[in-house]
Each structure stands twice: as structure tokens, then as C-alpha cells.
Image (cartoon, rainbow, N blue to C red):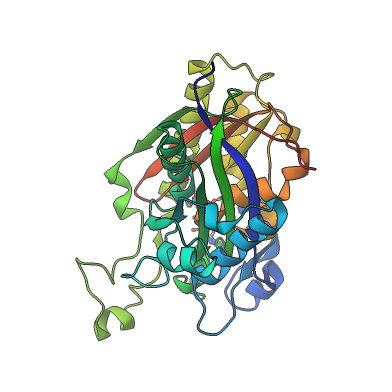
Length: 332
Ligand SMILES: CC(C)(COP(=O)(O)OP(=O)(O)OC[C@H]1O[C@@H](n2cnc3c(N)ncnc32)[C@H](O)[C@@H]1OP(=O)(O)O)[C@@H](O)C(=O)NCCC(=O)NCCS
């Protein structure tokens, strides 16, 4: 009998309707469509404009989309893992609220925060729970309302990020499909280069921190870019080597959508042709925890049972890694 593996068996997604295009950003900060497109690959991003709504609003809709498509009963979910860097509130787990709202009344839930690698690390966590035999249905949601922490007068960050949510269901598989291997890394050297200074335990919110705009994302883009390019390519190459995968064996690269040039560099190192590299950064920008499930949702029709997928991500902290997974179903 095969070892029990953890497979993705359903996908759902949600993005807000409001579109913020490069052309509109040109009217807000000193930038232009040509610069943004050539440096990042982004043409537009979504923003959650609903008054008083946070990340959970999108996470709930992504999960509901998954239930509608798959017919899975929320009452059968054992665990909800909410990957996010922008929880609804600093205290009171967003995942717990989401689980209750979607009717996952028999599940427990919690948040997992590893900046742009949150969903990647979530794949590792969800798979481990399934492989251990402890739970049968784990719902992993990746959602971020990046617009809530972005300064729309800072051209270094406001062109990059967007809002969105995606969800996947993990279940046991006896055909050897699903999660195969992971190579996850982190390095605290990254803390200075991508961060929000205030609002945490070091520098609690005050009149001063608000005045100094210290509740917004700060990014030293050039330095992050340098680490991201080598970090994502290194782990992707490593996971291929370790599993004896040639470039022909890999069907898809599902990489964090932070910058098209970082994705291209990773694909290049792996020797992959463009058609194997899933890209939707032009539509959504960097949605942090939602980039990987949004790719799975957008390209679900093309993924075939048995396909070899390499997931790769890089994020603040620094956090990064690659995961090798075999796709487990053909979309009906
Ligand atoms: C942010 C990023 C797109 C900037 O691209 P870059 O090629 O590094 O650009 P630089 O910061 O070197 O800036 C180049 C020039 O463009 C200017 N510039 C910066 N932002 C600009 C903008 N939005 N519009 C127009 N010009 C801009 C800079 O001022 C600089 O001008 P100068 O040469 O006269 O000083 C890129 O560094 C990046 O993607 N970084 C990593 C992002 C990432 O992966 N983050 C998340 C990990 S999850």
C-alpha cells in the first residue's frame, strides 16, 4: 500500500471588483505605466473598497467559492489555516472568525504569518497534518488586504501590492499524488529591508508613529530584489535536484507573484520554457498570501492529474522556499 500523501482536491478564489490601473496610479504618484510594466510586469491590481471590511471578507468568499465548486460540506472541515500578513485585527485570530462564518463549525482554526511565504509554509503545515493521519480535511486560505498597510503616496510600494484571496482543500491520497517534498528557509537578516515599523510590541501605536507614517509597509526594493532573485532560484533548483526532476519532468512553476523579473530568473535557472510558468501578476500585482492559490484558481483548467508542480515563494523576514507537489485531479 502506498504511503498516505496530502493532495489538493479543490480550489476557490475571490478578488474585489475595484481595479487600480497603472494609468490611475500615474495620477497619484510620480510614476508611469512603462516603468511599472517593465520593472515589475504589473498592469493593474484589485482593492477592497467595502467600508469596514477586512481580509476576512475576501477569505470567506474564496472559501465559499471552493465549497460551491466542489460540493464539499463546510461541516466536514477539521481545520482552517488562515495564511495572512494583514489579519482583521492584531488580536482575535482572523481564521477563527472565517471558520465560523463559512459554517466550518466542527473545525478549529488559526492564523499563520510568514509574510509573502505564508501560503507556501501553509502548504507544508496542512500537508503534515494530513500525512500524520490526524485530520482528513484541512482548508488552507491565503488572503491579504495589502491596501490597508500601503502608503498611496509612496511610489516604491504602492505600485506593487494588491488585495485578494484564494483557498485550497487538502485531503489524504492513496495514489502517491499531492505533497512530495519541501525545502523551506528563513533568515532574520531580512527584517530591516521589508517591514512595518510600528504597531507591534517594539513600537506600539502612538500619535507620533501615525504622524511619521510608520504603520505602512517600508521596503528597500533593491535589496529585497537581490535576495529574492537568488533565494527563489536556489531553492527551486535544489528541490529539482533532490527529487531527480529534469526540466522536462516539471509541468508547472507556481511562483509567488512579486515581480515578473524574479519569476523569470527562477524559471531560467530551472531551464523551464515560458509556457510552463504560471503568471497573473499583470492582473493582481503582489497579493502576498493569495498569489499561489490565485494562480491555481486561474489556471485550474490546465492542470492535469499527475502533473509535477513546483511552488516557490520569497517574502519578508526573510522567508522563502520551494515545494514539490503532484496535482491530484482533472477539473470536470
Ligand atoms: C521595487 C522594485 C520593483 C523596484 O525596481 P528596481 O529596478 O529595483 O528600481 P530601483 O529601486 O533601483 O529604482 C530605479 C529608479 O526608478 C525610480 N523609481 C522607483 N520607483 C518608481 C516608480 N514607481 N515609478 C517610477 N520610477 C521609480 C527610482 O527612484 C530610481 O531612480 P534613480 O535611478 O534616478 O535613483 C524592485 O526592486 C523589486 O521588485 N523589489 C523586490 C520586491 C519584492 O520581491 N518584494 C516582496 C517580496 S515579497
